[in-house]
Image 1 (cartoon, rainbow, N blue to C red):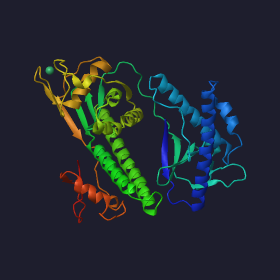
Image 2: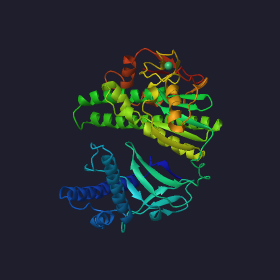
Image 3: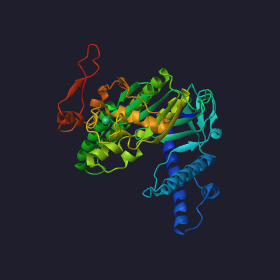
Image 4: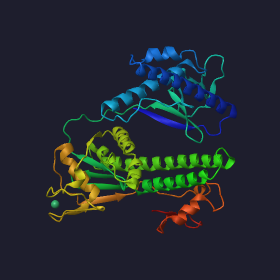
Amino acid sequence: MERVRIVSLKGIHKRQAARICVGQKEAARAWTVCRDAHLAARQERGPWPNRDALQKATKGRFALHSQSVQMVTHAFLANVDTAQQLRSQGRTEIRYPYQDKTFYPLMWPAQAMHLEEKRIVLPMGRRRPSLVLPRPKWLTGKSACKVVWNGVHNELHISVEEENTEPAASLGPTQKHATVDLGQIHQAAVVTNDGEALVVSGRGIRFLKRLHSQQLGEIASKRSRCQKGSRRWRKLGKTRAKLTLRSEHRVRDLRHKGTRLVVDFCKDHGVESIFVGNPDGVRRKDAGRRHNQRMSQWEYGKDISYLEQKSEKDRIVCFTGDERGTSSRCPVCGHRHKPKGRNWRCPACGFQGHRDVVGGVNMHPLAFGQVVPFPNRITYLRPGNLRRSSSLDTGLPVGKGGSCLAESRNQAPQRTVPLRVPSGNRPQTASIG
Ligand SMILES: [Zn+2]
């Protein structure tokens, strides 16, 4: 199994940072050359450039290591392939690569990397100084890597081959299985076929996303009053990047913790295979401005892939499929109606139960061909503590009206919950809307 480990390159030497910056611009130029070749071929209705053609077109033209340039062409072709596949599935709004890029990640295949005792040496091409980065202790052999700008600083992404403990049991008939209903209010609702259920809260993630949207809105309105390119305008831009990065990290952390809870629950209950409902149909519906924002912020694809990775590691079979209609059917009498609120109430037979668990119960016949009773025990868990970091409060430059965050807190509805109280400190608070 291949995994990507991320090393922060914060605080590397200025000279190295400058080399990275120049290299990323060169890589972007290489990308643009590929894009132009592809675009020209499409307009002339000629054959699309393949790997060889693109490598020929980019060979020796850029101030990069030859294999870094090749990696750019491979990445470009992979993007074209993905776009082609999606378009053939009817998603015609997907465009082939069209943008002019100013920066593009620097990439090296495993064989291009040189490892020294305490350093990684990444060649930048003949007669150009190499990139020298500190070597992490866990890095044992040469691996493919990538230098990526995350909006605030550079990161080194190293793909590490992790030896897999035996493959998961084959897809034969299994005794114990579980279904996972993904959601926003509840990140995941798990139902096993022997009457156990787990609900993992997604409120934390939703709160972080909403907070971030608010912050972005405030920065945008402050920036609209600045002169473009002014010092304050740039400062606000930097702050926006910082807040975005922090929000992404916090959400990613909660996502991993939440999916870990799901897989641990399945492991503890001896589950052999998991079915994850794919909410693609729900997502594409137009449901008004606010709801659409919420939907577009819902990264269920990440949940699915995290679940797949984690269950693979724990040797549980994991597969996905359409979940359409599972949340609107009564698990007892089969009556269909659209639920309102978090509780599913059947107008026909009077059944009542947790809405997301109902979805999970209804997935069992679809995925495993087995009707299961509504679970009599539901465990509720939260993926992690939502601490408000003190640096978040000072994350924004203080303007006339105090910091953005202070303003947003005043506007937020007055529902304040005390979170973790560190000994000796004042209680930290966070507003949840
Ligand atoms: Zn009913």
